[in-house]
Length: 351
Image 1 (cartoon, rainbow, N blue to C red):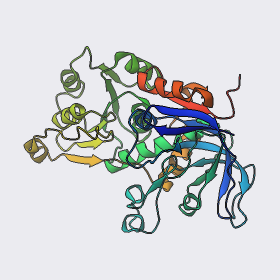
Image 2 (cartoon, rainbow, N blue to C red; image 1 turned 120 degrees about the vertical axis):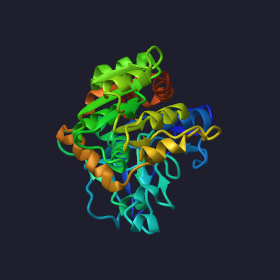
Image 3 (spheres, helix red, strand yellow; image 1 turned 90 degrees about the horizontal axis):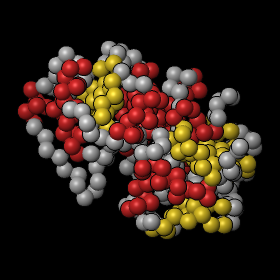
Image 4 (spheres, one colour; image 1 turned 45 degrees about the vertical axis):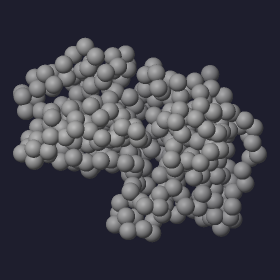
């Protein structure tokens, strides 16, 4: 079978490898769709401290079960499934407290386990243990199901800052995650949603799809002035920084409404993780700052249900479908801003 093997920064090659054999407590799937994300691009360019090459990467996975291990029950050959990316141990204090997203023993598909940039893949026993194999509802495509994993991360972030009815939400970063934040905030009842980015082309592409109440091109418009005008001088009740930008995080704290909530969704570069914070702004405005990292298996299920119900549509966000042989082109499309969501099709792209 074919698989995209990551050997180190800048080295991602599609090669022929042996088809994997599932253990007694495992499943084997034929990968139909594996969506790409900014993390895949980071891995390609810089590697990742939790990933030891060589490894098959890709973690936004959907496919069809083609083998069931002898000791594995509850699954059938032919079942269409979506697989979680972050795998909690289900035993540490965080997991037992219902905080699987910050499991201290977390492993991940495409990191510790071979991932979805391959024609076939083993679903390890730890994923099954964590209830991380989700049946794809009838009528939902593999491509749409593969977007459940990033939506689960968005769901986690918005839950931590309690996005809901009456909120005015500013999303900073118009990539695929920013688009999902706009769609979910609307689904949760936000009254006004705004989308901002420094890349005018990417902003237009995303804004044409998700149609925020106001799109702000930070390369030519004054973000602070426009946000103040759009909120009657109060500021957004929720600001989500969906970009790896320290400046965005600093702006978010400065612009948030009194009593506002700020989500740091996009992590910062490891060599530049520090920002300047006016502590008195946080203190006197009673701001809530929340980090957001990953998601739980339950949030994956909820995300898949939101997509299937139409509450958070994603089909129109998938702008590119590429065969496995073009995985580097997929990553280039992600980093260039010329695409919203790019899906790798290991079995080939249907005409």
